[in-house]
Length: 452
Image (cartoon, rainbow, N blue to C red):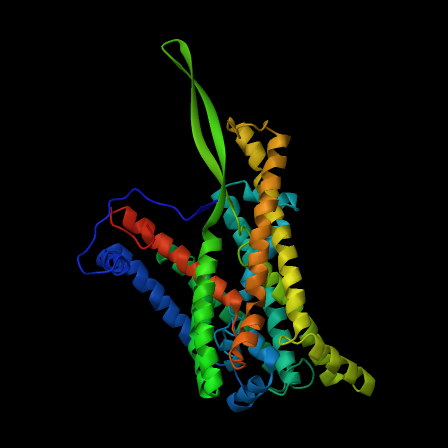
């Protein structure tokens, strides 16, 4: 199992200056790299500006009080970088687009039309991307209306619905939220084309990082001396978890592959052999199992909360309130279910992606083989066995990341901090990916980068 990699680019040490700082100075000194970095930062500023534009007719004080009193809304607010708490036009973030992307990824191997498009090169991928954009709009409408109804039931807003005189304000609010989501998707694609890193991931990163100071501030200002001590312990835990995330994100199992090639030179047949490897990542699923599991486990408390608020029959309301507490994001049942779902979804998504790659068939077509393993079906079975074994490590790692907020809160007793380990995983992953892209830019100019 290999962790990370190495490069052969020449190294240059600057006297008295750390290597990371030196790499940053050299990156910023290049005009084209500097332009990409500045463009990315400018788009993030635009995103944060949009995140503070509220939809029409919102009472900010009433909305703030509702969020302060409800843990479920606070949990949903984490990924929006506070945009949901402000009920801004960017309250949905880019998550309807992420959901549409995941659905398209899972549907591609199941629908022949999408499968053929995925194999048509760049034109096919653009068509699939267009379908993803189309799917994002109804998902954003559904998610936006559901959030508005939930916030209204909790007393944060009013006049939501399509009866009486509420139809036009509701449509205007939904239109604003959907337009905000599509604008952020457009910003993300601009960053991918003209900036540094994956644009949509950068937008998500900006939202998560923007919410961290407020969470820490509430933890310090509302806490006692014990809470402040817990905050220090929490910082130590966060640093250790970041190191663990980097370790598992970079971990690979490299399966050796040999290629036999034949060529005619001077009327004679020559056989040549080349060596390579198949890198199987320990965490091939990334953050997707966490998103799936969180989306499923957050539904029961929202549903029971909605039933408890609207039911006119006493025993139904009492039962819904009991079940809401049972599945609360602060309860053991919620986190236990999240752990099990994350492990299950990790295996499911990894196997779906692996089966779509057809590694054994592609190897045989290219004249490659794994030493000691026959081509064809035996190769497929061997790779599957190896993938299942290493995926156990990735699944348990993601399960641990999923329940980390519960464990951290239990150890530190800092209740005011709603830490999202999923957000931490996203932050670390996006930072590593962005640094690698800057690294690639620097390697083209024989400079030492951030990671090498």
